[in-house]
Length: 65
Image (cartoon, rainbow, N blue to C red; front, side):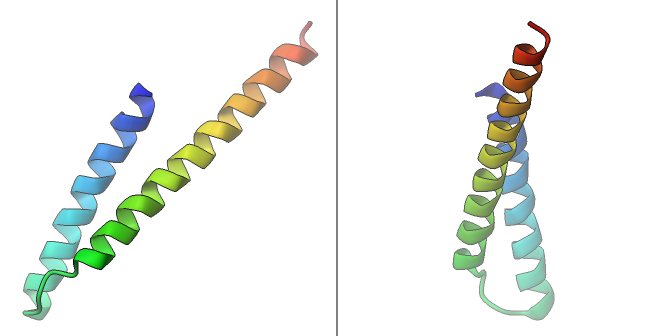
């Protein structure tokens, strides 16, 4: 769980900073939908990567037995 929060929190902060910067650059309103979409996409991506890492660890531990 710690690796998830170590990745996801900086990801969300980066998304917020980037979207706010782009909005200010284009002199438009902040696109909160884009922030939510990118934040959720980062979370889903991290969950998938964590699942793959766990599956590889389990496969390696079974093959070494």
